Length: 294
Image (cartoon, rainbow, N blue to C red; front, top):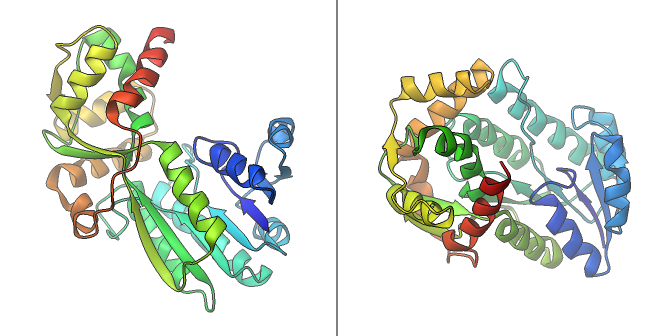
């Protein structure tokens, strides 16, 4: 079969593409960066260099595909991040309709049931809506939990302040490893059994914020590493001082508030999946390696 993969060779798209290639399928990977071509071809895939903001490019690339994997990569310089995310959803929908693709595995997120109030994830609500409006196209929306790798952004805080924390307070966090997401996406792309518009939640572990601090702390030789609850204002100021654009920082604070209130996880809790393979302790080894090299 012929598959088109968006997301270049990122944390999910790379292992996903490797799995499909190893199964003997034709894989084309879309990347906006020409310098990724050699890396893509080294995987045994074909590189399609172009922008997901270009509907004509997407349409031409999608033609003839048995299925596609869609995702919206972050764009830190977008003046309105939610609007940008929504627009990419529109671009995908237009290209899918024009190219005749009938099967789509779309990367969304836990919390995408919220049209407002969940930061960038509320943008993904509208991506799902655009794709669901397509006629005679089968779509499964993967809604993974909080990426373990997002915890890497705390390395500087730990090194310089001796703490880890965020504005979502003392909650049980639902987390996932990108490899577990890639595995789920590969399952759906290889089987193509999904029909209509479906949602699939993916999670690897559920742990309290204090447990996260303890596990990561032990991995880096600091078992007493404390979890600190930040106010929304303090979280915003910290992100701005770290150099994040104002709109991006505001979106992340909003998402943190949705986590703190519990609203972000409400639909997940109604449709809880079996937890996947990679646990927090497994990721802690990756975290420790990154911490040592930071």
